[in-house]
Length: 414
Image 1: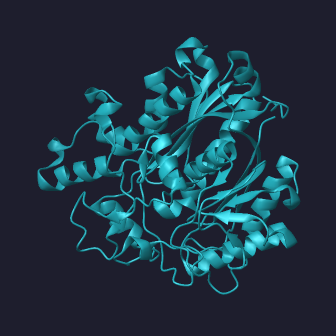
Image 2 (image 1 turned 90 degrees about the vertical axis):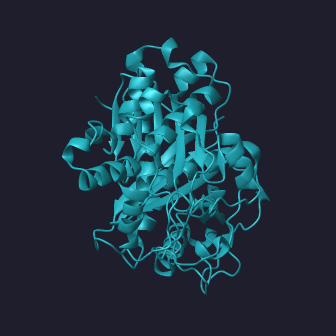
């Protein structure tokens, strides 16, 4: 089907789960206040690991959101996503049962799937034998499990899918939602969550060499700072309800946070573990997103940065922002609220989009914490305390391990 580019994709509902707040209101209030949720891992003994801090969602109780029967079949990652989906529906006052089941779909992103469930079953395999591995292991770990469970729970029979592009996946899922709406579907549940905190999952992440070994939360994840030393992982993310402008208007949606107005994606095609040092492909993704939205750097009001936290990666992002925005680069406020929750992989970009959408609603840019002294040459306008601002167009940047680059533009809906 030929996409109808005149159809607009609007964000009408937000559901967020993060280390500094469960539920959109709690998370957003903590984020505006600069309250960090990064702490020492307590879910297991991390003493043997060089990284012992993470953004763990300690206050999440699956019993508040999901029946026990479904809990035992699914991973913690899926539990949080089901909760965030329910939050987004409630926020938008949208009941999928009131609409044609073929008109609503689900598109999510994941970079590691059901880690906790897989850890438990692998331990059963090696400790007791294959007869002690549960049947649900075959599906609970899989990247697409969350999309499937959201669809089943709410009876969504429209187009569904999952995107795997590491940290860039959260943006790509939202662009895929926009693309699907342009093809005639009315509503998509979109975004990403992650739950990468466990013995095996942490071991896998340590192999990159990018995780911080700092012992204090304020020292562990400080992108763009002269003392940047890596990042810490985090769990959680956001699910957004995305509707066509026609459906939102027809049903009287209580609010429209923003329009997904532009998107750009590129691939470094450079190295399996390191980004291309020139940053050209990241800059091109930003320029493509601006062009797709029909705006210039002069129209941009804020940037939500990828903020990897590793000096090499941070330098590349700063260079790409300067290359794409030109003389305007030093004037546009740049922030990274993820410094309060850790790097959420596929969940991080969708949570950034949620933060950008709420910033547009409230006229306040949430801060970057732990950024005390920008590294040499990092002469951007970093937001280190909450800042009031009228936002009409906002850019969100995301990168994925392996060379993925993505940029998305939100625009205020008139």
